[in-house]
Every structure is written in structure tokens, then in C-alpha cells.
Image (tube, rainbow, N blue to C red; front, top):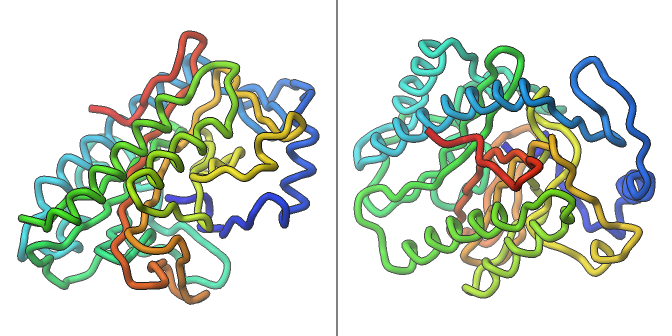
Length: 297
């Protein structure tokens, strides 16, 4: 789930974010009762990362269940019920159910089920899926006080070659973003890898919703956009990835333009031009010897 559903403007028009970046150039580290806090970023201990891995494993199992159910005639509400049952049976709790955002009713389901032109935050319903649809399923799990989060976009039956190319590009953009993570590397390198992969295939990346830190909370600093601006490359604006940081990397690619639209009182976010959108996400930990995906079976 994109960070709090908060729409991210360009870096140049977000002065509060710029101040945070300036402070993070030479951050002071102080002890925190829940890990080490680094200029607003919480670095997790080895034990916390182990627990996040367990939560991520449950998320991956849920996505496998959802993928197996993505067939013509199946309603997304049925997928939601199956996923919630699995989470509870594994000793976890759905992280999205009851999630609150200003101006909206609490999120009513355990998964986000976003079909076709819905980018994120789709609500499961009783409408059956149709051959040729695509469905993005986003799952969050909290277990033993830590969170895991991942998403995948599934084809429903046979899809067109154009739709298949979009799906492949989204998955490749996620792989590129994860591959760009390295200890003491830069945050903007993740964004750059995602954007280059998407745009080289002729697709746009959503700018108003972003990835995020995760672990002790569902949404933590830093924000992880899927695009990079010129300002992000400036020396004073480069965030360094430290071991212990855990991120939710989540490219959102549109077949058309990157603009999205939504109503303040409603959850679903759609592409503004009605084009298809895909969403792929993994929870990833930055370790001393590289990056490790937490949301795998």
C-alpha cells in the first residue's frame, strides 16, 4: 500500500521534505526503543529483520492464494476472504483492514483489489472477474509487532499481447528497483532504475503515490518514489541506504499517462485517462552484504 495514500508532489514543491533531506546528509544517530532512529529512518535489528521476514513470508503465501484464484467468474471479495482466513490461521493480522486516512471511512478489507484502470486501493466486491482483466492484489500483514507488505498484478485468464507486455514491464521494473539497492548506495538509484525500465518500454510511472519504509509501522520514512528529478541527484539531496533499513519497493506503471484521479472520500485511485495500470511490490531489507527480499515464500 503506497505510503498513507499521500500524494507526493515533485521535490521542488515539497519544502518540508527538502528540509528532511538536508538534515539527513550528516544525520545524528540516537537510540530508540524500537530499533535505531536515523533522521526519521528506523534501522532494524537482526531480530526485527527476522520477524519482518516471517511477516513477509505470510504475505507471499497470500499472494499465491490470490493468484490461484484470479480466474474468470471469481469475485474479488472471495479472494479477500480467503486471504484474511490464511493470515489469521498463520497468527497474523491484516494490516490494511481498518486502516484510516483523513476524509475516508476506514479501509474495509484485508486486501487492496485493483482491477484494470485502478492503480491502487481498490476495494474487493462481488463483481466477477472477466477474461482479459488484470487484477493488482496488495497484501499487508502484521505479526509479532512488525509488518510485511507486497503486491502483484495477475492476468485473469488469457490477456492481450499488449497487456502481457505491460505486466512484464511492471515485474521487470520491480526487479530493477530491488537490484539497485546496495548498502551505502543512494535512494535515488532505486527510483532511477524503476523509471528507466518503465519508460524504456513506453510506459509511465505514477508520481503521486510512492513506496515507503516499513517494519515497525506500515508506513515509515523514507518515501521511495518511482521516478527521479534533477534535484534528487544533487549531492545535498542524496539519501544513503544504511544496513538495517527496510523498504517497500512498489512500481506503479500506467499504459498511458502518469496522471491519476480519485475522490477525497473514496479509496480507489484510477488512471486519469482510463488506461491500464499494474502494481508490483516487495518488502526489501538493506543488509551489510546486499539486499534481501523479505516477501518471498
